[in-house]
Amino acid sequence: MMADSVEAASRTLKAYTRESISDLVENIVSRQAEEEQFTEADLSFADMTVIKEIFKNRLTNIYHSRIEYPE
View: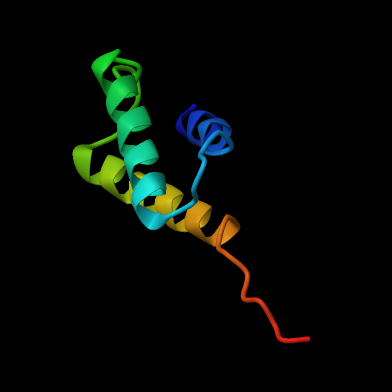
């Protein structure tokens, strides 16, 4: 559920910076927590922190900018 939301929302970003990706992940997971979507999940706050960091790293790797090579 978290991964689907984060991945889908990441496609709407105008700029793929570490900051924009981090903000996106934090906002989505926070909103899901506020909506009590994790009440039946066996997740601790530490687990959620690790999960968010993994999402941020993966999205940063997916959307990294390419180096322009001279012609």
